[in-house]
Amino acid sequence: MRAVVLDTCCLINLYASQRLPAIVAASMEQAVVPKPVIGECLYIRQQADEGPDSLIPVHVDLDPLIESGVLLSTELTGDVELDQFVRLAALIDDCEAACLAIAALRGFVLATDDKRAIHVATDLGVSIVTTPELLKNWSERGSPKQHDVADAIACIERYGRFRPHTLCPYATWWAEQKLT
Amino acid sequence: MLNLPSIDPKRLGQRLFEARQARGLTQQEAADYLQCSRPVLIAIEKGTRPPKPDEIVKLASLYGQTVHELVRPGEPVSDLRPHLHAAVNKVEPGNAEMEQAVKDLQQFAEKYHELETLMGMPMTSNYPPEVPLTDHVKVAALAEDIAIRERNRLGLGDQPVYGLRELLETDVGLRIMYGDLPSHIAGMYAYAGDVGCCVVVNRRHPPERRRASLAHEYGHVIVDRYSPGVDYLTYRGRKPVKERFAESFGMSFLMPTTSLRRRFNEIVSTKGDFQVADLCRLSHLYFVSVEAMVYRLQSLQLIPAGTLEHLRESRFEVRKAKGILELPERPETNGRYPDRYVYLAVHAYEQAKISEGQLAGFLSVDRVTAREIVERVSQTTNVKDDGSIEESRLPFQRSLLPNA
Image (tube, rainbow over all chains, first blue to last red; front, side, top):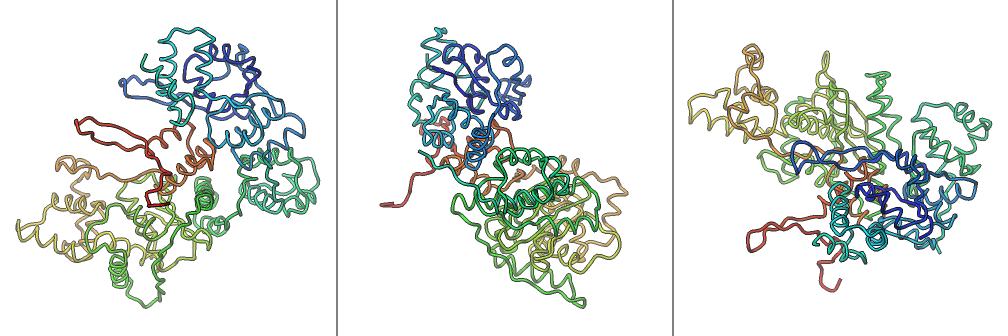
């Protein structure tokens, strides 16, 4: 798959999986993250010391992933991108608008699980990939062990509080992985 | 192919003007930041010169707002801030926390209105009739009468009211947020035609105090609807007549004379006494502070004046007493935003009318917390036939009407 812009919601999911570099390596040429997404204060959940049911928020630290080249940080450049960004910001929030403007004008794929962003991206003719699809790609191309896939999914559900909608084409695959 | 919306320069100009003022910047300072002349900035704010995309991005960053907040569709709502600022500056000049609270209340009103417009569900208001106050009126007696009338109007009888915030929101149509106010401030309120009555109650206070503040603000809605105001825990000197009304009304509304007197008499006739433990139980039953209950019983001349001072001298501790009497904490919604607001935001998100980022913005939380809220709101817990517990997601958009 060509370069992929990671939307905030998808980025949180991949980060929560604890296998972001492997998933990125197996699924795309380059993972691109716009500056506004990096600037958004992101949190996932982490196991607390109090017990297995206790979770605490923990800050998402993207710096090591950017420094090691797993994620490529990018900015909106030029009048055309800025104009597209501002118009899109009327429909969705700034981070989503930045991702979509970059994907639309640079010919990248947009990774998002957000229904609203998917609607807008589809109308703009931007190709979409979702978290379940990226994980399926990784499971097929990256050759992880089966329990690794199951654990990645469990981590996304537990620490990212994400579960695909029942209408998602990969919802059944997602549920099956947890049972294996 | 999507036709991206064009941005109305007049609406954008108004938002830029309000954002600059809220940030406390002059036109010259903003113009210097943009590296343009002051007349150009004035033209942008008037909507006669549409700003370029890079100028919108720069101004958003200067004003501490997102670009979305500036360019989103929808008409701006009335600005509550100028009148509230005036009220705040009279009593708390230069208090940064109060300035922030004013901004928060404005933002709450705007976001609430935006969600209602988006979902086509405007707030139904059922405000009480206004009551004029004169200097010669017997405030306590009038407040008592109006409280009874309001209870009857809302179908409450004379029993304790528990979900007060929800009641005033759904049955009266007040917009109520719990905000961070300085600890000596109980609450604030403001009114505008398009957003109605907006109230902020200090969320740092205990639930009993928040309820008293809420009932007090409701009193203002009755006698003082169109004048924004700030309410203190205590006042120095003689209180204005409207304050005295709001205070008496709040107490009468939360602790109606008839039921309180009946319960007091029952205790006394059964036990032959009315003790501190009875006071604690009664305040727990009406979900008010012990202090408020003492004042109310004193005003009804059921206990002697000076009871509170006597309790203070004997170092009476309410928390300890509640523990000894095993009085449980009453459940009370203490979220920043009211339930209806949260439901509207979650439903808008479920229907793809807003994105996850917008949802997090509406709820003022991070993304994962927003996901947890969606989970909580849209899930239901069932007990299956075998006794096991099952959690399922509600299909919110399924119609329950025949042939719909």
